[in-house]
Image 1 (cartoon, each protein chain N blue to C red):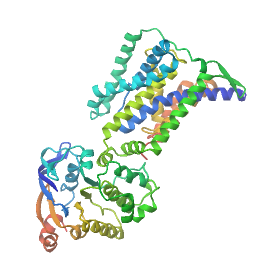
Image 2 (image 1 turned 30 degrees about the horizontal axis):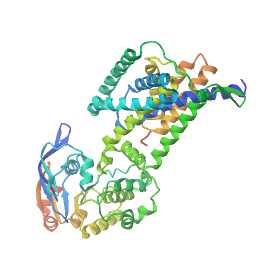
Image 3 (image 1 turned 180 degrees about the vertical axis):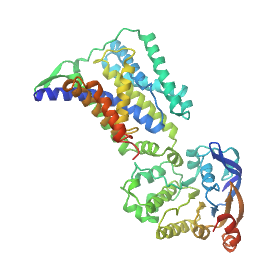
Length: 287
Length: 230
């Protein structure tokens, strides 16, 4: 186990982390701001992957990467008007049941539209192949995922910390009633954040499509890791989503190569430890 | 300025206000007094649209008041809640500028609220939770003023504060009063409230049981004992 091994696994871990970050950031901020549990978030990721695969097959990869988040954000808007708006006051149990049901609705819809056979996307020419860094050859596309995740994180952190809309979102997460008493239309703010969160789930799907096969149940498979990330990181917090994603990515990747026998238990043990020691997660939005 | 007529309201199944009727006059300070649980905070929360209006009507500046809190705020009611509700994730400066975002046209600016509370000027970059209780109260009042409200409603601004801070808050509110700011003040501190108020309403079991002037209630020990337990 030389330096090359560690670097290779570190890059693998980062790539998994960034994919999870794109998914969990939407879920966690929607929860933090709206106190709404959207289990269908994973299904939106699957829809994003399918849209990207379809557009990539006809127009090209980059068109797919741009279209997928937009289409999924629109889908989020539709879900909001049809379902979520009515369920804002109905408590977590009803929300979990309805959005859990929504997973299967969306799963069957993707199956009806796109069929059961796994789709693939060609990596675009500019991101194809491998390059050598630090003595290991690594796929360029996976480095692109790492860079994209980091860039999205930096952009969100900047907006949240430095802009007025960022201050409004933080105020809404802190105390939505008081925010409303200062003239903020919190519900409209929620809707905007919800659409951005859904769009990021769609982006995650589009980004993942070339390295995973696009299947109807891909959203279901990613849901549990995403929920673990959100719980470990702390609900409602951008930094928590990043920290949780990194922890999950590294534990999962290094667990699989160093402790293969324990790999599948490791992350759940960590989850249990976090729930016992810091029930609000590592970086909860509310202090 | 603000008229409540025959208002019923409460939390969930529990009704707290039973036919609350009161009027706050423009350019005057109305103090709402009463024991714990009489319905003072509930009255303010109902005005702000944070609790549902089950019966009756609330009118502000001659028109029925919209029930959505963000409309009520934009319409010109500045709210200083009992729990102060400073946003912990925001700096003092951000707390103030958030309120200025949709502020009505008026004379309150960042400079002017810092003139009023110089302490806040020294702590602009501090986080909302790094402030002492007194500073949080100053920030809550300053934040409400940043909206250029036509009416300021304050819920127990002296609660839990040291006497010297209570005196400071008193003097600042007196300044606002002489500048003609309309206010509704809910208070447990009898001396504080009656020295600031132009009108007094005493509340018990969710309705007004007495109204009059501060001088009258200060002179009437019987009344104080019966409704306030003073």
